[in-house]
Amino acid sequence: MTNSAHSTGPKHPGNSQHPEHEQWLLELGRATYAASRVAGICFDLARVFGNVDSAAMYSDPLGALINRLQPLGKRGSVPGLDPFIAQLESARDDRNDLLHALPVADGLHRRKSKEPYYVRNFFDVAELQQVTRSLSEAAHRGNELLYHDGGAAVQAWYQGQL
Image (cartoon, rainbow, N blue to C red; front, side, top):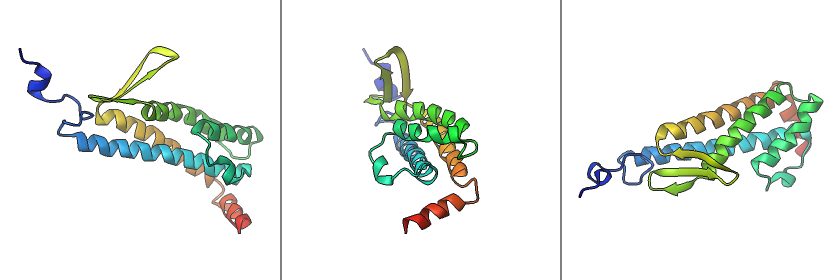
């Protein structure tokens, strides 16, 4: 008896034996880098507009960085920050699904203890591209907010560091 999966080869690029596995890994790297960019922009917004000391945030996970932005939205320090925080929450879900997924034969598989029917797989390049897009869009929007005043706040922050 022949197993059809073995006779036709792996079905998904997330499988290390699939001929497109290198492209899958490349997109996984892009998604992971985009996740770091999101954390980085939250970090910059908090220190430039919230006067949060950089060292106080070095170990902050993304959720804590987002929480540091909440008071800035309430004060109106950064126009458009509240919609950005909503965008961050969605991007954070994508980020967590990716970074907390476990390796399986076909790629990465995410389940949640508190949501027993929740399943999210990252078996194909397109699934990773969606996460990369979500995170990249959030990082881009955050960068626009960071420089909403033409860079004056960033420049003032850097001058204060000298």
